[in-house]
Length: 283
Ligand code: NAD
Image 1 (spheres, rainbow, N blue to C red):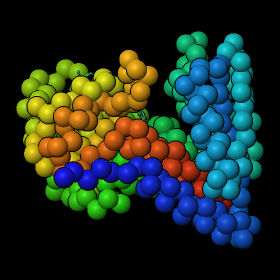
Image 2 (cartoon, helix red, strand yellow):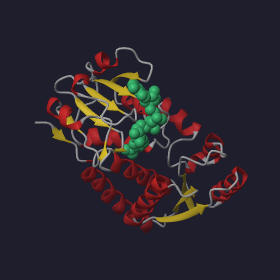
Image 3 (cartoon, protein in one colour):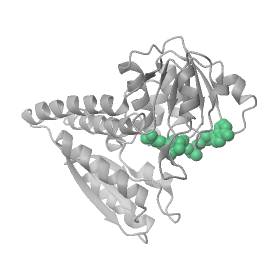
Image 4 (cartoon, rainbow, N blue to C red):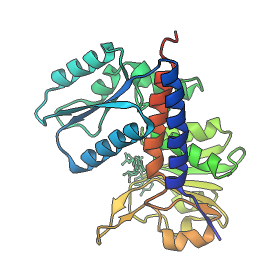
C-alpha cells in the first residue's frame, strides 16, 4: 500500500514550529512584516493572497496588503517596491504573479531587494541556490524537499525525474534535488521517449500543468510520485498532473491533490519570512 504523503499535516507542523520561533524572536525584540502586493483582481490570485495573509496571522507576523488597480503602471508598481525596500519594518516583499500584461514581470522581480525576496525569484537568490550558498529558496520546490524529508523518503543516490522546466518549479526543483545528492533528469515538452525516461525514476516529480497526464504507464513499480499540478476538472473538483487512481497502486508513496504539494508552498513562504526577520541586524 502506498503512503499518501500528507501535505496538510506536514505544512501544519511547519507552521506550528514557525509560530514558536516567531514568539522567541519577538522576545528578542525582532519583528517585521510581509508586504503582499496584488495588481488587478484575478480571482485565483485573490485566493492565494488571502491564504498568505491568513498564514501570517497564524504564525504571528504582520502582513501589509497592497491591492492595486489593474491599470497601475509599471512605474507606479516599481515606486511602491522601492518604498517597501527602504522600509526597515518590511522584512519580506511578495508580488503576486501573474501581473497584468502591460507590466514586465522580470523588471518587477529584479526591483525587489534580494534580502526581502521571500519568493526566491530574484536572480541573486537563484544564483545563490545554483552554487549552493545561503539565500531564499523558491517555495514550491523547497516545500517538496520538506515533504520528502519529513516523510522519511531517502533522496541521496536516487534517480529523480522531473517533468517540466519552468523557472518557478522544474528548474529550481532539479537544483534542490541535486543539492540532496539525487541523480537528476529534467524532461520537458520537447523530450523524446518521455514515458521511458519516467519509468526509470525512483522519484518522479510532475510539474507540467496538464490534468491527469501522468498515467500508470509512466511509473516504475515502487516509485515515489510528487504531483505539483493543480487543475479544476469538469465537475469543478481539484486534480493534479497525475492520474492518481491508476498511479497510486504502483507507487510506494504519492502526494494527493489537493492536500499534497499545495499547502507546503505557503508554509515555506512563511519560513522565508521568519528567516528574514531572524536575520535582522545581521550584516
Ligand atoms: P509552466 O506552464 O510554466 O511549465 C510547464 C512545463 O512543463 C514547461 O517547462 C514545459 O516544457 C513542460 N511540459 C508541458 N507539456 C509537457 C509535456 N506534454 N511533456 C513534458 N513536459 C511538458 O508551469 P509551472 O508554473 O511550472 O506549473 C506547473 C503546474 O504546477 C501547474 O499546474 C501549476 O498550476 C502548478 N503549480 C502548483 C504550485 C503549488 O503550490 N502546488 C505552485 C506552482 C505551480
